[in-house]
Length: 226
Image 1 (spheres, rainbow, N blue to C red):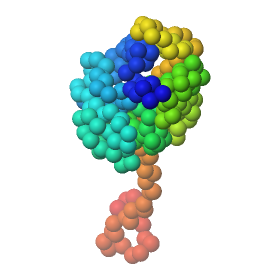
Image 2 (cartoon, rainbow, N blue to C red):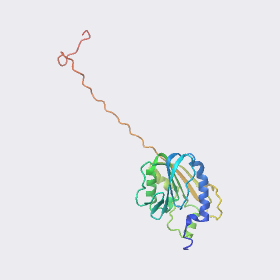
Image 3 (spheres, rainbow, N blue to C red):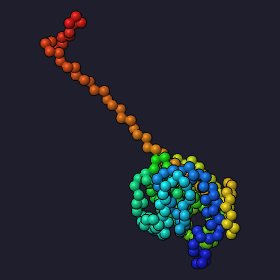
Image 4 (cartoon, helix red, strand yellow):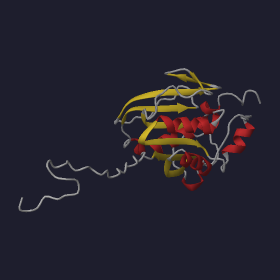
């Protein structure tokens, strides 16, 4: 059991699932643009996808209660980035191993720019991958349904635009990328951050006092002939 418990995301079945996710994500990410993109991943040394309209990736890997990679931080602290900093945030199975998945999603929403895209990948709980995880002894992996994640994201002012199942329904030793159809073992979820509407300020009309006319008594009016 101890041997099976190690390095779940480096196993052959998971490599096949990750390849299917990458194949499905590629055309979607070609349309994402921005100066910076953020990848938070459960997979050590995972390379970010190629996207020609994204200038630079910041990569973080979840390691227990820490994030390591381009920066080092603790998961019980806010991500060390400004609000609205990234045009794209990619969570690659990160919510499965995060100590507090909802906190991670809130932080991802915070650093995402208005109009930017949040992309999540994960194993679907209604597939053959959950029994496989239990057989591998992966007690610390938490599989949430995309329906529940979508509910969390809407509370963080994101609109879910697409949910798709990909990959084989159950683990296989063949590393063959394919989409898998409605019973795929993984899912992709794409959500866009709503732009904050600027509330218009309604100006109250103010009465403007007329300039006094010299030489007239109060209440008198100048005649037209004058």
